[in-house]
Image (cartoon, rainbow, N blue to C red; front, side):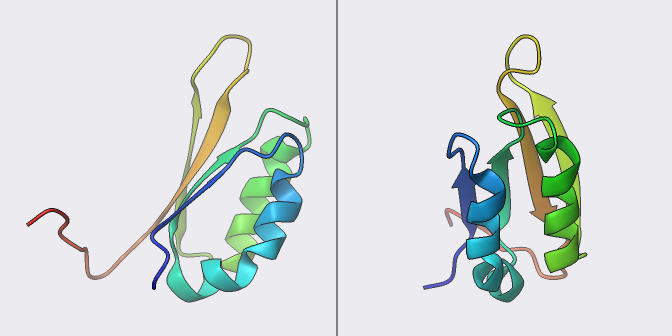
Length: 87
């Protein structure tokens, strides 16, 4: 089955997890939600990694808590054909 969404929050191993998902990301171009707050270098290394896997993503960063706790990167693919969900 195709993969539409990947959510990653693995307490500091988020970068490595993305590397493990690289084939799926290249093939299916899912929406990706990944935590950025576990390690300071993730603020730039994770977006760069996603862009290097597939440059066809728009990236958004949102802080869902205080003091950058719960900072999440949303990577949304630019799709030529959008899918309609739910009927």
